[in-house]
Structures are given as structure tokens and as C-alpha cells.
Length: 344
Image 1 (cartoon, rainbow, N blue to C red):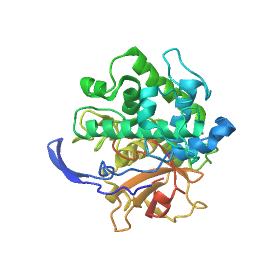
Image 2 (image 1 turned 90 degrees about the horizontal axis):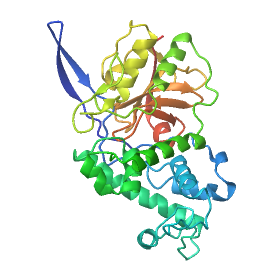
Image 3 (image 1 turned 180 degrees about the vertical axis):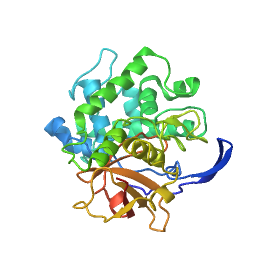
């Protein structure tokens, strides 16, 4: 995975009760050209055995196209039938139309041929096509021509065409397209394990985890999130988006778990200096602990998440993404410097 860099910070000036409050908004805005890790909770046991290696391989092409998303698409498109032909002529497990296949044909298994009837070739081609659409709609979001979750916009573009995303500034209001996005999202849950066997920690920590997990699926919004929950953020990756950035999610979870006693600043850099220091050791860490990441190992703690147990965290990763669970054993995070803090 590529490293996330370029987290920005700027002062936010707010008048509260006649007092001038200056709060640093930081922790959560990487450069749009870089990408974070995949959701690590893909459950390949639900994928037919003969296709597992190709779904896993194709799920590494780009961060937006996870193995579980591809698996959901293959089920929706063909029911995993590599020889099916639709009434309109779409072919194979990924249901490519002949003209589209001519553009995206891929030799997925390295046998020297590119066949739409080969599951390996078709699945890899579908991933490359999805990733190209993801890059295209990300450009629309970055330029302000569209708003929404990048994966959802990618799926909508797959169904209705990318031009429709620009035309409507997001997912178009077509029942078929909106239904397609909802269907893939629902099927994705079949191919992923959500928080398996999270151990119980303190009552406070368990509440922090519970509150944070309830936000899963909400969009990333730079500067978004406060003690009251998701809020509209700022700038091109926050304005008009009701959600959380990484430090905003921590603010909300800690505030709610503490019954309003602990109100943290909206800055990952400051949050990692607060609370009680905890060793970076899964045997000592408890669910509800907050983990700040210096991703470049240069002293900049530009990202932060909430430990949920079993080497996993819940966090708001980056623009175009959503609140989700990721593995702390992923090299992307394992290679960073950590600050682990406990607030209750």
C-alpha cells in the first residue's frame, strides 16, 4: 500500500459564548493522490474456492476495489457463473459487453490469452475497470463537480456511466443505479467479518468502541465530527459532507463514553499528548484506547484511530472513504510510530 501523507492543519476561529476560541483542525486530510490500506476483514470463506485466489489478487489493484466489493459484484452480475450470457449479450462471470471487454481484456492468470470466459481474466479485468472508474470519479470529487463516497460513486458510474455522476453531482436519481449501489453494499457484508470476537475491556472502553462502531459507513469529512456526532466539514473534502474525520470520530466517542466529562480538541497532534500513555503492546492495550500514528516517522501524528481489540481499529481513514475497521498488523500501520493513549 502507498503511504498516506500531507495531512493538513489550519486554525478554526469560532465565537462561543462571547469567547474567541482557536482550535486546530488536524488529523485526517491526506493528499488525494495517495491511498490507505484495504479493510482487512475480508472473509474469503464465503467465496467459491475456485475463485478465491483471483478475487484476492484483483482486490489489491487499488484501495477502492476491495476483495469483498469484487466478490459482491461477481455474485450480483453472474451468480459466479463463468459461462453465463445475459439477454443483452453481456458475457462471463463479470458480465462484460463485447465492446467493453475489447478495451479492458486482461490476462489475469498469465497463460498468454485474454478470454472473457476465463474467471481469472474477467475478474482481474473487472478490477482494473472499477479502479479506472474510481480514479475518474475521485477527480470529479476533488474538483468539486461531485460529492459522495468514492466507492459508491464508482459503483454508480459502473451502472450508469461516469458522465451521469458529473451531470447530477453525485449518484444519479435512477432507481436502477441507486438499487445497484445498495445491492452491492448489502452483498459486501456477506464477504466480510465485522468485529469478530472483540474482547471486553473496561466499561468506558467498551462504550468508546460501541459508539465508534455505530458510525461505521458514514463518510469521511475533513474537519467533520464533534461532541454531538457527525457534522459538515470544511474545504473541498469536507464542505457539504456530513461525517467525521479521524480526530472528529475520537472526539465524539470519548465525549459520549465519558458522559460529557472529556471534550478533546479537534487535532490528532494534541490528542496523542492527552490521557494516560499505554505501551504499544496488544497484550496491554484495551478496546477503547486511542492510537495516534506518525505514518512518516517524522514526528507528525497525522492520523488517529480507536482500538477495538484483536489487532483491529475503527477509524475515519481519508477523503472519499468512510468510517470502517482496519487491521493494525497491516504494514501500512505496523511500520508507523504509535502513541497509544487511554482516557478512562
